[in-house]
Length: 119
Image (cartoon, rainbow, N blue to C red; front, side, top):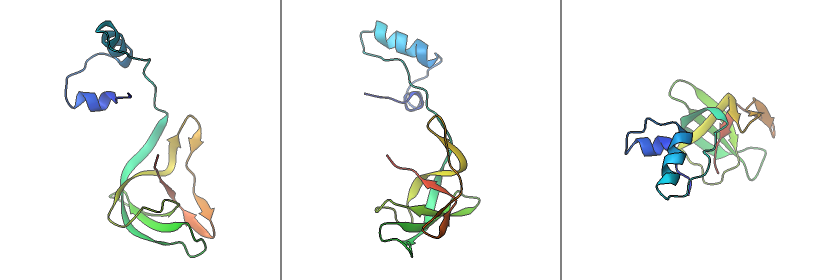
């Protein structure tokens, strides 16, 4: 099972580094693997203000997403995105993975200023 150290910190005080914590858990007889580093930045919680059918694509939506300061137009392929939802939102310049940087894109004739993230 993967567990976020930040999630654990909500329940217990942790002063050790992730590597030290993994060693301590192993010494207690629990299976602990080397912690994985997350290679992402620039992801915020966005509020979907509007989600409508994309005018030039059957399986895409054209959404307006707010980060609390600005609103962004985003082309999205998730069929379950609707207005009023809070979503993980990668703005232009966000880094996903080791080297995938979000850029402004034109998708089926509409610009997309970021990406709504999902699994």
